[in-house]
Amino acid sequence: MASTLYTQADLDAMNQQLRKRWVLLAIPCCILLAGLVSSLVIRLQWLSILTTIAIGAILIAGYDLALKPLRCYRRHLNTSLHGRTRECELPFVALSENIDVVDGVRFRQLLCADVDGKGRPYDRLFYFDAEKEFPPTEPGAMLHIVHYDLNVANIYPV
Image (tube, rainbow, N blue to C red; front, side):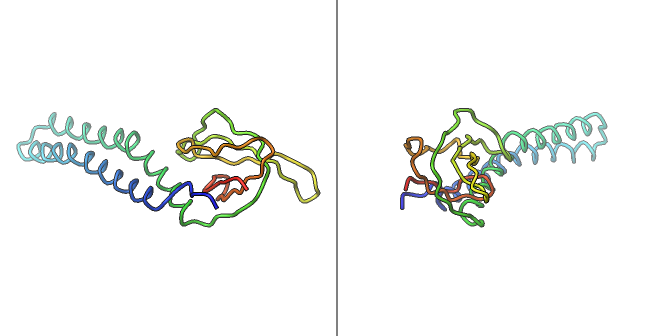
């Protein structure tokens, strides 16, 4: 069996990075919150409005730009490592060069040949992490694919 695509160390590093970003987002919000409280005490309505708008803008933009991508990737890592996965061995057809964003994670499309219940061939679609290196494989070579839903959790040539 080849090396795994993801390890627990990857998930731990992702959790640590997420904590750092939460702290970096909380620092300006706490400073602005102190400004909001002081503006309420001295009764400056315009300062209260400005600090409230600034806090909201920082929280919305910070979450959407800095936290959400990490949370989506962490969910993918967690499911790949600890979720219900299935395994199959299928011949490799192609790997797309285009990158698609599915559930907040960047993937490349992986096509493998498969046969349905009636014996008819079809191309089966998987999503391979765009941040990972795909193993060198020729078309038609057999791949052992560990997956959840359509997302690849581990892959190696047979």
